[in-house]
Length: 222
Ligand SMILES: *[C@@H]1O[C@H](CO)[C@@H](O)[C@H](O)[C@H]1NC(C)=O
Ligand SMILES: *[C@@H]1O[C@H](CO)[C@@H](O)[C@H](O)[C@H]1NC(C)=O
Ligand SMILES: *[C@@H]1O[C@H](CO)[C@@H](O)[C@H](O)[C@H]1NC(C)=O
Ligand SMILES: [Cu+2]
Ligand SMILES: [Zn+2]
Image 1 (cartoon, protein in one colour):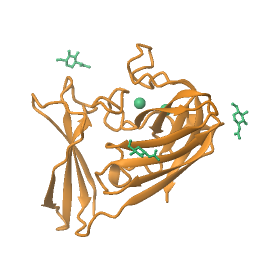
Image 2 (cartoon, rainbow, N blue to C red):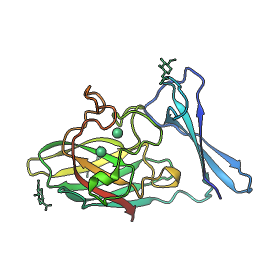
Image 3 (tube, rainbow, N blue to C red):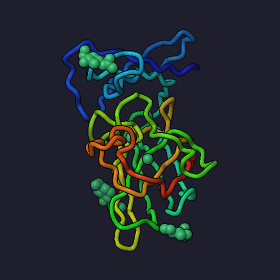
Image 4 (tube, rainbow, N blue to C red):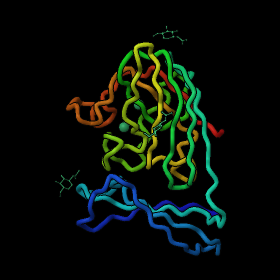
């Protein structure tokens, strides 16, 4: 069974909706395994095409499962920096239902801290080894509520005067299964505020200018 990822450029005029929409059809792949084809309309603009702002569709083929979706769970222990904590990730209806991230992060400075999924699940040389934001669709950095964002962009978490941040995020683009699963990648907490791409700084459209990395952990199966 192979998983297929393909991109299709929308010709013109499709509205740019922040909400990810999917359609589901049953197809038969060359091995005669029934599969589910998901059409993700908020994917991105593609690495090798200039679609000048048009949305493109990403088509993901998953093995068909006749039973109801089984919830998926993942876990992150932040141990790669000064900020510590544990986060649980839950996807009630994989592969395309939203992912809920919940937990507590401590030993932060009071205020907002950029919070992202980064590409690599490595802390070999500290949080820097997690590399850049997870961005499979080659978009600019942005607000998680907008179409123009990295898949890994989750905005800011807010620490109280004791340095504790309660994390309670539900995100429609993340998934814990299939070729776009974030399991095996890293969560990173930054020293500063993520400007959501609006700061006008040279790094606003790549990192949100969120500063150094004060906490990180690898997302694992739970
Ligand atoms: C993409 O196309 C638009 C509109 O044709 C053009 O203005 C822009 O410069 C192009 N960008 C690149 C990177 O080629
Ligand atoms: C909390 O952060 C400070 C630096 O801000 C660091 O010196 C200290 O070791 C951290 N505490 C823990 C428990 O990691
Ligand atoms: C998390 O956020 C949701 C929606 O904003 C809210 O209904 C829920 O009570 C929150 N949970 C916690 C533990 O704060
Ligand atoms: Cu980051
Ligand atoms: Zn980003």
